[in-house]
Length: 131
Image (tube, one colour):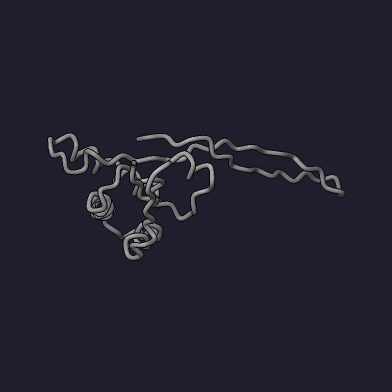
């Protein structure tokens, strides 16, 4: 059975839980690391933060980190650190994958009584994409 580290600020919805089919550990259980990821501190060392997340995931023996939160810059650093360690021949992080949710935006235009139009968008989860 696969083991996942849920790193999103959002709780997984039913369809996501059904797709993962495994043991889910929540990053919120490590409040210190979770807070570092979601705060997007512009002075943070994002490389160190990425390595801290990867090390934590490795210690937990997870197969995947799901929806890692944080800034786009953090996402890049996470990918680079995962790739560098794999690319140098070190196998320390090579067993960890990253999953991102793929959703479809469903929009509806609703005409109001005064004639204005209100646009409502719903994001419908489709699947996870492995990186």
